[in-house]
Length: 243
Picture 1 (tube, one colour):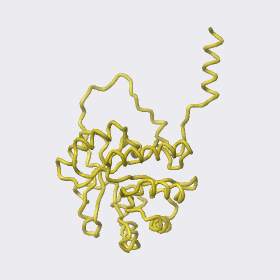
Picture 2 (cartoon, helix red, strand yellow):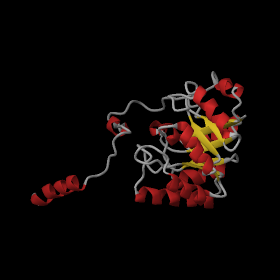
Picture 3 (cartoon, rainbow, N blue to C red):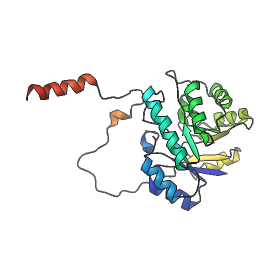
Picture 4 (spheres, rainbow, N blue to C red):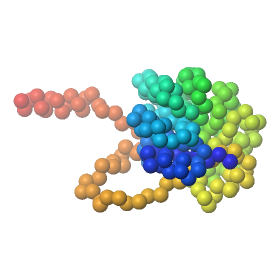
């Protein structure tokens, strides 16, 4: 059974290979579900580990419905990953109603070739997982990373098994979300070929800071935050008026 480790820093990637994991999904910022890692991070991992590295292509946190500029960033990141020697791409695009954006996802798949393409957990936002599965089979994705549209893969095991059955071997269902040493045999016993987890363990390294850099308001996935033209201009107006 293939174990994919979601690594969001260099030490996690090194530890994944050291421990015997079979593959890495590389990302940054696990707290928001992961975003695309930096070029420097990707390069360093590829130099230090020998197991296959799949890279998450997600230009920002929040929803999976992207602007034209977001989409251009995604395509540039995929080209960089191909040129750098990555083994796979993990990505996907949704419409405003959270259905799969077929045309844009197809474009990303074509651009990723010959690398393997995993449709990521945006799948868990789609209105109907079975309809979405059919669409992704038609697009010839290699696998779908999903929790079975539940808060954890263990809770979503029924849907995961139904999805696996419906694939008829045309793609892999990759269970992910809350998988650990206590429940991993549920998925092996269920006949899944691969599992995905982060296997993270926290260790406090520094004293509590005077000022937190975390901002909870930016974690609302129903809101898109952008620097606002009017607010920027109002600040400049204050500065210019006082000049």
